[in-house]
Image 1 (cartoon, one colour):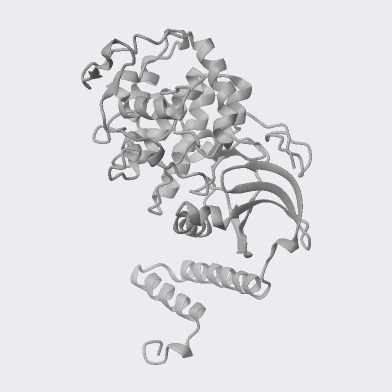
Image 2 (cartoon, one colour; image 1 turned 135 degrees about the vertical axis):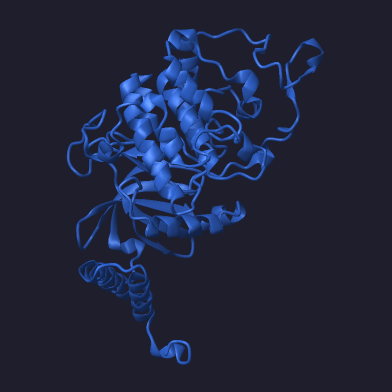
Length: 398
């Protein structure tokens, strides 16, 4: 019918018909077919209800600001009718247009709407007015990993293992939907009420504009002595003119700069894979590089290629062979170093290139019960008093 009289069949009927056909082809048992179709119907009526009532910003009471970025802000809000509490992300459309971000944000919104996963921050509604795009998302009161790391300096190996393992599951769940995150960093790893981790901020975060970082393809230069380029095989050469900092000095330095970077328009390149910075073709593997950088930071206290200015960080990342070092004082086990080195390396050798199972199989994760992670007690239980508590987030001026 639909073929000859497309107006005779509603989209929802069509979706149901497609699903029925798919279930029959897959020979799903009748009872299960029924349940799946019931679930679809429930979703469809929910969807119809939302369609009828066009949400707008006036349906929400606006509360504390809990985040700020290049495109706008995130604040706690309460829906007036249901009294439910959400996080509202408000993005300035002109800024997004100026930076060519509109397609990106659409993709993100679609991803969040279609992936129903325990590991991903839920998106409930999105709407817009002339000036802004609004995303109404679940509020995770535990704060983000950046705040946790700033409170703790470093995590123990067991604590890091718990959060890195949950991050693996989160990344795996978006890769299954053929999305690449490209900007996985501690600011985008949020903790729920019980301390479990969810991934957020799909591309609404500042996309790194590598036109700010010229000449990344050139070899590494050492300032001073005639500035001769270093060939890439000088793998253990340190930058001789820079005084060597202790791990403690480096840590306090990083923490001072960290906040500024997080909220600046430049963003922090610290977790971005070399192939992304070089604008080479890149695939899902780039998210596994970011995982390696975060794991290093959790255990060492600052990210592996930290430098005082973003440009130098980018150069170090691109020349990672000469710059990836494990400080003695951090006392990392050989398994830890092995896993980090297999994530912070060239795409061809990088673990995770064939899928998350490669990473899960690494000996560093020995004993991790992947299926039960999200039911277990989390490594940290955040302190939260009441549903409007924002103590685990930065304070922002109105």
